[in-house]
Length: 243
Length: 274
Ligand SMILES: [Zn+2]
Ligand SMILES: [Zn+2]
Image (cartoon, rainbow over all chains, first blue to last red; front, top):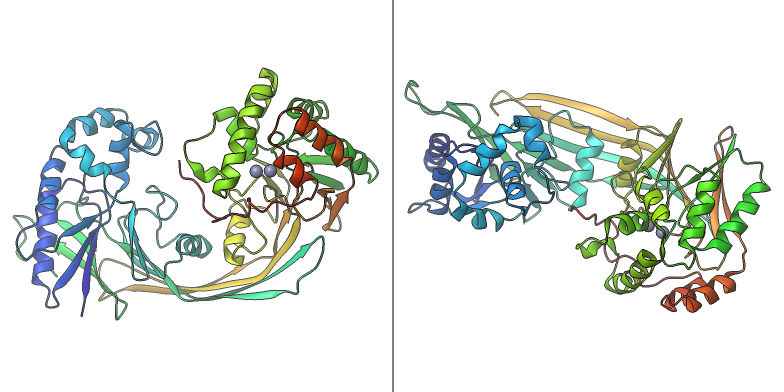
């Protein structure tokens, strides 16, 4: 039995990450792989501690596999190595002051490490990525139209797409589908052909650090194709640590 | 109302002239152009001048973009390595040949045009560089049309004309959301896609359907009928000019055959994410 823990959006919140690691340790089925789908940092100096913690897992902790998220992308844009030249989205969502805050928050010495992060992982028939096959900014939610979901899955021919951009936990199953197509060229007309869609899923893995005191993440069994969403409550005033 | 849609003229003035004469014979009220006015061919300035003087609404093609923006470092603008090498030579030649007015005209072209339930793009609604081949997965093709909000999507870029009808599209989805998997909020729904069409206008100046004739399409808005047109022109004149002007002679060779092997994309749906 193999279990993956998949999380996203620590956003510089070390306490939240520790709470999730503790929850992972408590699982009856041992977690073998730990995927972190980006946004480990945010425009906060505490991000440096999170990077430090991720890069030095303790004994018996799975080695985290980290890919680039939206926040990492914004940082790389500031350092001139993003996919666009200007931090347009950062300014649009968080205001111009955050440009300096982000620049100041992340030690120069860790930028190379951030730059070396993959855009995503393809493991078995699963794509694990921050946004989608389109970009780190592409936000898939329970309300995304099915045809768009299918497009994102088919771009990499994945059966399961795990993503974290929305911060929500959801399971979006395309159960079946069909479409008929006919093509006419200058030289011939092909009869209509039906194309069937096999079942595929998009899974929103939750968000670890955004809401203080409450982290969400996902456990996945790739052999049984079983998805379990975990909610971890943490903090000094809570009487319990997990539900 | 009848419209004509032309694409991928690629500096071939002879072919454009002959196609415009053919359009004249069909009582067309409006012409649309899907870009790639320049590149490969010997007369980029004359072609742009003609399109401008006729006030033909035009969207920006991949070549028009590359000439304006400069060739991007990402090699994936080209479908294959061989195509890339040739493309670079043609790009450099075109870049030196075009007048400043031509460049500024190409720079201001929109990425898409809209006319009622019709939408016009060069490659796909997502990128001027995406190849919408006739065998693209039918749901992917449907997504491209739906992304525009139109019923019929006109595109070019592949240089081979076709009409594709997509119908009876349906998907069944189940969405569970909520914080806890113990009490999931589950919903099953059915989605059906209305009838949509993709019309590829082929290429006026660099046809690749296996014959030398220029291709374009006519569309009758009342009957919604699409006619793929093939027009003969003096391709040898263009071939001679290609050689004379010092462009790679392979462009003359393939123009004289209406074929291109190197540009059969290695990965046609790959879109550069620069
Ligand atoms: Zn073209
Ligand atoms: Zn093109």
